[in-house]
View 1 (cartoon, one colour):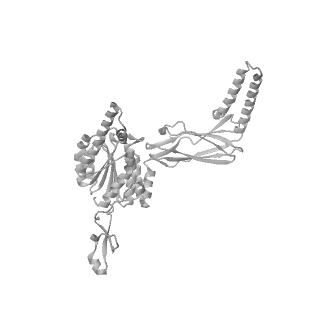
View 2: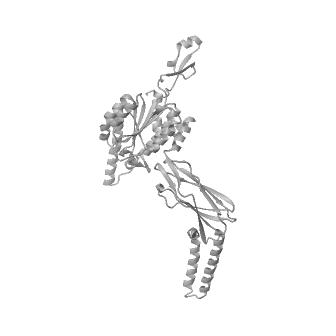
View 3: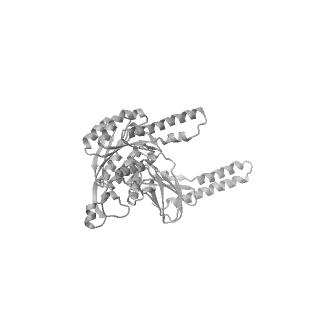
Length: 443
């Protein structure tokens, strides 16, 4: 039974049989082709037996391995390396079919190649998950055929191999590296000119060209008989909270990824940068109830706890309770903090209903409300309207886009910082706003 399940007919065999069938058909009019047809059938049957001996003679002649990491990075292209070892004494041809997890909805994955005797073949393919969770790979199927290409022998390896998909670790590492190398501008991150200075004094140093004259220390200047200035640094260990709305408004998908997942990826990368800047980071998620709360802590290992908490966040079809958010923040965040609220409002009326709570939060904390642009509306707005229906669609799209800009004005009118961004640029714009607030000493 195991032999039968591993045996497959090569498509070239059907080509030979089709040729024999044509010869049998034509022999009705040309009798000489009848013998030719039987010769073709006989030769093919002999080659089939030889091919059976070639492929099934050696035992365990093929070995293959799928190399999976411990974690996949959500929304990123993750490599899956494959290693195949040929133990045959001759060259074989490969048809490789990997059974991908059901979440990818891809049933046509195939890779074709050949491999020399007693050698190994390596390749990799890319997968892009758009949901967090557990992903199970099926069998790694390797179909081998000899140079005769009459039959194929199937080898199966590594069934039910599991990998967990976490928030975008690749994105976090990308911004972490650029922050260390002072190359943030390569990804659109701005350098903010400092206005004034924060209250944290660092040292007195000699004046050099470019230092602010307002920081001159006249007592130290008189003592050392040369111009001395006070040097200040960013105030450290300030509490910063990423607050993620998990209500129904965050269920909206863009480029296959929910707004919630864009917010989660951004919160992870932002928290990593803030920790490297020596600030305390915390996390809160809410909808009808407070689902996750991590107090603001400055410890690099705390990032692992944030990662695990973000992994378990999900969204439901509920309306979010901003009053509950205000009450919980008032009770748990006792110090003035930078609060980044990832949410979304599709209508100005929805924003106005929550405005009293946002104003109350902003009185005690530096509140930054993150709103999402509907980039698909921009596509409709930029298209030429050629008929009544397209004019109607364009008008409605412009109305929704105008309401988004109106929301920003409404928030700014009440002294609330705002980020209006496309989902793709969320992380860049969030870190930009953080750097701006730190540089201007607004917190």
